[in-house]
Image (cartoon, rainbow, N blue to C red; front, side):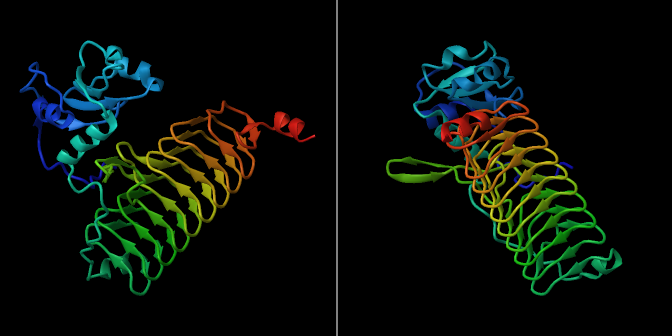
Length: 326
C-alpha cells in the first residue's frame, strides 16, 4: 500500500537553490532541476541526497542521485554522475532542502477531521470506544476493536481483526491484520532529530511512515517514531513489551521479541528472530543479524553477526561476559 502522508509543496527546485542553502559558490549546473530528496539507497535520477559518513562509501559510489550534499573531504567518493554540492554541514543543509519540498514534515499535525457517520463501522463489525476521534480519510478493516480516547489521524490504514487499546494515538502509519496495540502507545510521531545553528534548534523533517506488518503485538506506553526519510518497519509476528522506544527509520524483522524499557536508536536494522532483553539500549545505524540474543541491560554499540548471544556494556559474547565476571 502506497498511501502518502506528506505531499510535496514544490514539483522541483534548482540546484542553485541548494547552493544558496549550503553557501556554496559554483556556476556549474546552476539551473539544473532537482525533483526530490532521498537517502543514498533509494535516490533516483533527479533526486538530491547527502553523504557524511564513510560507513556508506560503497553505497554513494553506486547511488543514482543526481546531486549530493557533501563536505570537501568526502566529495572524492561520489560517482561521476552525481553532482557534488559542498557544505560544511551536509546533514543540516540536506534537511533544510527537505523542508523546502515538505514544509510541514518537521512537526505533528494535530488536526483530525472527525468521521461523524460511523454506520459503516457497524456493517464491518468494527467497535469504536467513547471519545475516540477517527479522521474521515482513515480506513479500518472489519472485526477491529478500537478503545476509548483513541485518535486515528489522516490517511492511517488499520487492517482487519485488530485490537487497539485506549488512549492510543496513530498517525502516518499503515497497519496490517491481527495487530494488538495496548493502551497508551503512540505511533507515527516525529523522531528525535535536530541540530543547532546560531544557537537555534532546527528540527529535522520526517517524511517517512510507520509500517506494522501482520500479527504484531505492541505493549502499553510504547513510542514508535515515523521515518525521517525511509519508513520505520516492524516485521510480522514480532512482539514488543511495554515502554519500548523505537526511533525513526528502524527496521525490525519477523518473529522478534523485545522486552520492556528497551530503546533502539535511529536507522538501526534488526534481523529476524532476534530477542532483546529488558532495559537494553541499541545505538543508531547498526546492523543486528538474525537469531541474535541480547541480554537484559546491555548496551549495543557495534554491529552483531547472525546467531550471536551477547550481554553487557559494551555488549560482548556471553562467553566473554561470563569469563570477565569470574
